[in-house]
Image (cartoon, rainbow over all chains, first blue to last red; front, side, top):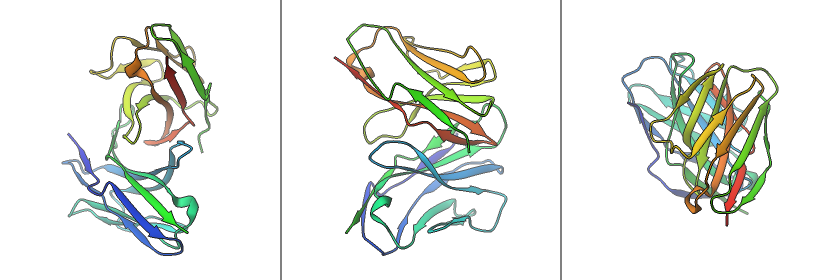
Length: 116
Length: 110
């Protein structure tokens, strides 16, 4: 079974600064994906970034980047130049790549507040 | 990106009165999921479909049923809603093991 741990329930950051959200996971699988999802107060879950485990290069999407440490089973999200619209709950998630019946395993989430 | 549409966005029902939530997706993806999400918690998987192959999570209450009449549409039926069923219900579709979520339906039970 897979587990995803987000140990920080809340964080706060000043607008325009950089913040890092932590995530660790546990699995015996070799082929998997990791995700960060964002859920603003409007509640739609939005995919922020995806990392394939077989790729050594860290994924980047504009101001969002990850630090993927496969051996340490760590997958942190860095948000640069934080904006007020980044205020949201962020979920780290894992999926085993097997095909049809893959299920997401979520962490408990972290609430990020961006201060003006 | 997958387009997932959920209707209605807000649903109010009475205790014990059956309710149906709907989900549609525009790109004919084979896999669809229903999640229940309570405030400040991670989504909890209720069911998922691969084509018409239905997969029920072991801890999904019998009160919850699902139908998928065709590739595009999926329904969640709550036969006798209780106060504990008040939650956000999220539908998702999957492309290459990446899930995309709809906006959700917030269910209130009076």
